[in-house]
Length: 215
Image (tube, rainbow, N blue to C red):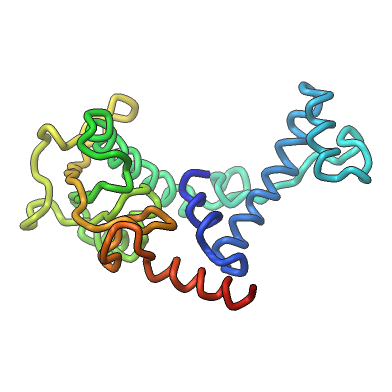
């Protein structure tokens, strides 16, 4: 929800990423309302009737059959895909753990003001992650990945570095500083293309122009 909120609010209504997210939301709605029905009998019925006032009762629906992409192969899923997302979540957790103390201490107002540097031991993993929009995944201003020992890579655990979280004892050097980029007045992301706070970034300018043209 957090990661895709930006797309839902700020992308153009016909944007493929936004439409894909709405498909996921619809799938989740149909599953969760059925899961809740045996326990929250009246609430689930009210939720279902609000969306489908002329439909049959939620208690007459079949149990949902969902895709198994993010399950292990023994459950009919995909081990490679499961492993990839487990790793992405580990790195995201390390980043969020490093950002939170700065936000708590009022160094930054939100994660969107954070420039993040991450050091990883695997050079191939660094190259792979550089192709992903990890700033979107971590909901920060920017994320750069560096091989351990490279100039500019985090090499220590200081006041602004978290490499050891209580939950999973990860050891990922992460260094966070406040971004110098300005804030888009529509999506609130801090980007190098925004000249002054309140100006629109390229994406938002394009979306607003297209919406104005349609109106």
